[in-house]
Length: 168
Image: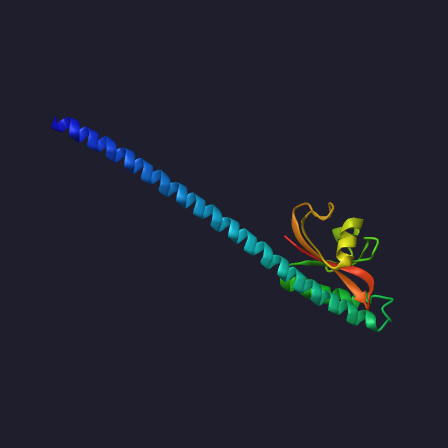
């Protein structure tokens, strides 16, 4: 009789052990997924905030440069050097686009892939209306997904152009 009781105890112990182990593993897996999800969300928000700040600085550089020309012309060398400085220190791509979506200036110089493509009218409208904030290939400009922020360049209430800042 003693062997039967011992066998039942082992069987009962094994069942409880398996149940407790499964619950513990499930809890660890759920907690891990939550940490990854919150980390990804935090990274995304931090990246977008940084892009916004970089874009706002580039807009200031652009407006200061345009002021000498009555906001009718962009002084390419001055503004592009400012874009390059911001771009090199923050690992972002900064480019200025007219309201038709054509790239006028880029932090990467004359041979950038932004000049090959035009920004879609939808994105230009969103950016000109206030701010564009998205992730993706920006209408095929990028091969991989990029975070992109677009901010209008305004003189008074008139939108002169749109500035975009992107990073992977």
